Amino acid sequence: MKKVVLLAVFVLGTAITYAGGYRVSLQGQKSLAMGHTGVAVINSSELVFFNPAGLVHLENKLNISAGVSGVFSNVAYQNEMTGESAVTDSPTGTPLYLYASYQANDWLAFGIGVYTPFGSTVSYEDDWAGSHLVNNIDLQAIFIQPTISFKIGDYLSIGGGPIYVTGSVNFNRNLNRTLTDLDGNRAEVTIDASGISNWGWTAGAMFKLSEDLTLGANYRSQIKLNAEGGEADFENIPNSPLTPFQDTTFDATLPLPAEMTVGISYEFCDKWLFAFDFNRAFWDVYESLDIDFANENVPDSRNLRNYKNASTYRFGLQYEATDMFTLRAGYYFDESPVREGYFAPETPRNDSNGYTAGLTFNVGDSFQVDASFLYLHFKEVDASYDFYFENGQAAPFSGRYKSNAFIPGLGVTYKM
Image 1 (cartoon, rainbow, N blue to C red):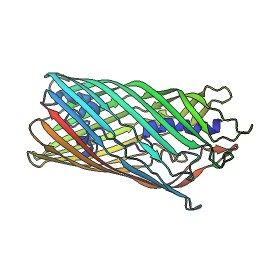
Image 2 (cartoon, rainbow, N blue to C red; image 1 turned 90 degrees about the vertical axis):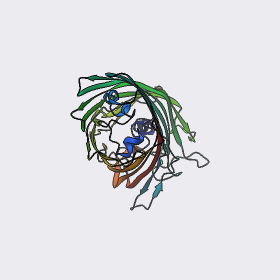
Image 3 (tube, one colour; image 1 turned 45 degrees about the vertical axis):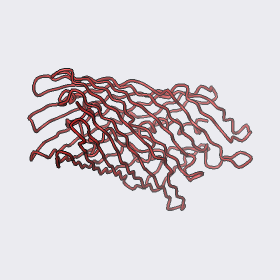
Image 4 (cartoon, one colour; image 1 turned 180 degrees about the vertical axis):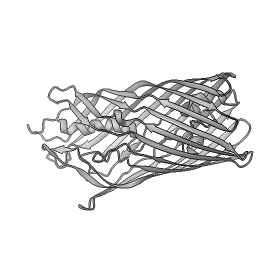
């Protein structure tokens, strides 16, 4: 039983952190169009996410931003030795966000954000070569973040607040590569957990060194997501003493890593703005995933992950073309935290390059329409997952993976 359920519950954790195989950042159309920079950019209430310290610098008393993105992604797998191949059939994901900020006075501002940084649906073809590792994942997660921002003198501001996370996940896989019932239906397990929630916090600082030059820093704490009383449902199990699989429940705890972002923005030639962000995610806290099963006949398990810390480098440009249009473009490089030998098809997460563009259309003094587009290309890789065991023997799963995502986004900004 340990061998059957171990990887299934592991996906509960990785899906939450990687959004079904992709750790795509979509927390604001303005910022995304500039390579997802924002820790030192003062443009809208998107700062609730990127750096709460900047809210107190917004010119308007009230600032509201909302938006949604469409995620069109796929993963292509091929094993050149066996000729096996598969392509994911992934419905469109629609991550969204809503931010609001209120300027109480010239030194104090409040904000709140509701956003979905992790959430997607990924589905492989039936009975594909890796169905013993994953068939499909369905993840939903909502982050709620109230914030406060203080100005300390002419050059320094600070801000932060708590973060509440709540979500659910559903995951399905075949039990192994060969087991079927008498009718030939593949034996499978479905893992389902809801009410996964906990608290974290964020804090930031912003330095206005001059009218043109701004430095920013933001820290987001580690958050432990607790799945308690999740359900493990087994189907198409042969009626045999050798296959005593029974529905049960489980508890598991996963640490989401802390991350630190520092950046700079510089205005030049009146109409241009350059931004650079460096993000460091402290994935080394994810050493293993420990699982406690309610059924005493099911042994608890410990699954080593040994992830490494990873960095993201983001660059963005903004150009005030006219009073009506603002144009943006950007690029980022995102390192994978997955070490060699841990590359699993439910999280085909290798190094990626993100290319972004977008614009803002000023409908009037108070209303803006924001648009962005992201093309995310993952490095093609030959990799393996070496920690699946069957009949007491290691059964590595390897192949070549190609992954990409096309992500258009649309948002609105209201200010007064």
